[in-house]
Amino acid sequence: MTAPWQPLLEWWFGTFESPNEIAADKGRLWFGKRDSQDLEARTRFGDWVEQALAGGLTEWAQRPEGWLALVLLLDQLPRMIFRDAPKSFAGDLRAQALVAQGIAADFDRQLRPIQRVFIYLVFEHCENLAVQNEAVSRYIDLVAQQPETDRTLFTDYLNYAEKHQQVIARFGRFPHRNAVLGRESTAEELAFLSRPGSRF
Image 1: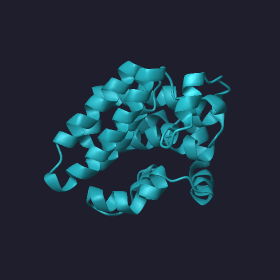
Image 2 (image 1 turned 30 degrees about the vertical axis):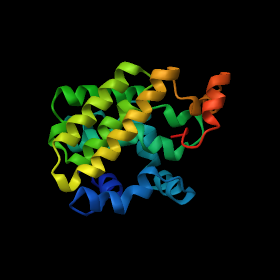
Image 3 (image 1 turned 135 degrees about the horizontal axis):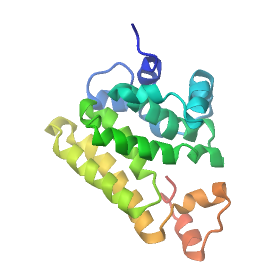
């Protein structure tokens, strides 16, 4: 019997085996900004996202892969479905709590390395330096566990986590979220946002 979350995981991770192949196949879905992808996320998984944001689908979190799928519904898909709207961050707090619970149960170590990237990414999205430090630590460990053939890919994810950490260390928040969340930017933040690569 197919697990209910399997279509989501197949859409997100595809069918390749190696992390490099998966990233090459799915990188644009993960980190690109395309209306067609956002529409597909909304059409295929929008109902699940709404259930997850409302506190539902808790039974999924009883198994590592279901836990991963629920984390995606709370953290990644709202950023697509509700892009440039406050609701894009509505699942963050629940996702952070869910990730902490799953890590305490060692669920992350039962996932494939490329899947673990999206577990630790939840911490990377948090506007709290201690949590950012935890994200970087998790990625450092993840890199160290990879064979040489995959290490460059995972080092890229670590570098990205460190960039997030540096922004939170400097500002205590992500300035690029200010406009969406109705927060007033400081002069220093505006100067930062004017530079290339300042928006994640």
